[in-house]
Image (cartoon, rainbow, N blue to C red):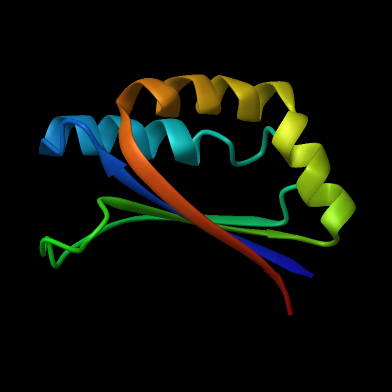
Length: 95
């Protein structure tokens, strides 16, 4: 199993923008066959070191993660995120 974790800091961290972006990310559920599970959460601490949104996805294999990366629905989300994010960090690991 592969766990894919991405943290996003948005250019505009208003509640409306965060909610819209969370909706876009959650929209991947059921549209990408390689995606075993998806969680998307909003930061509640709001400290200077916090990111605004966390995405946690699980895949059966590294090959499934790679298929997700090039999936047309994921590419639509990448396009949105490239417009709204200030920065992001990610980690992918086997478990």
